[in-house]
Image 1 (cartoon, rainbow, N blue to C red):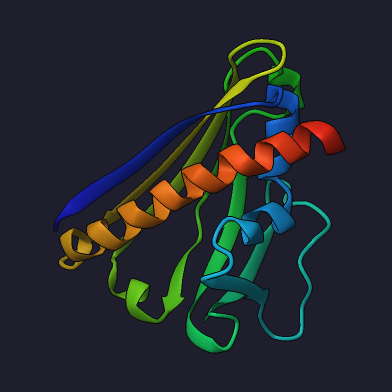
Image 2 (cartoon, rainbow, N blue to C red):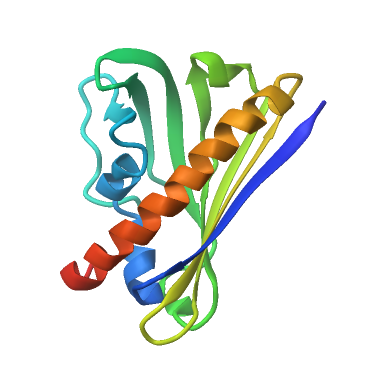
Length: 165
C-alpha cells in the first residue's frame, strides 16, 4: 500500500484561541474550498453549531455547487481541549470519504494542530495522510487543495481576529 502525506503550515494573523475556535466552526470548514467545492450535510441534516469531540456528520461534496462529486464522513476527535491554551492543540477528523473518487483511498487521516506563535498570531499545521493503490495519483490533486487551503486560511484569519470567535 502506498502512503502519502500532505502538510501545510501557515502563520495566521489571529491568536491560537481564535484559530482553535475557527477549526471547530463548520462554516469555516465549508469556506476553505469555495467557490470550487461546496460541502452540504446529507440526509436532511444541518451542520452543528460547532464541531466538538465526538461530532459526526456525513456531507456531500458539490463541484461549483451543482454536481455531487462524492460524500464523506466528518468525525471529530480533539486530543487537547481549551485547557491546553498555551500548548499545541490538535483536532483530528477520523472520518473518511464514503463515495466518489476519493473513496478509492483505503486510508485517510486528517489532523489540524494549532499552537501560539505570539499573543496575536498562531501556527496552523494542516496534515492529511492518505493510503492505498491510488494514493500517489491523489497526492497531486490533494497537495494543490492543501495549498489552496493555506491561502484561504491566511485571508480568513484576518476576519476571525476582527470577529473574535
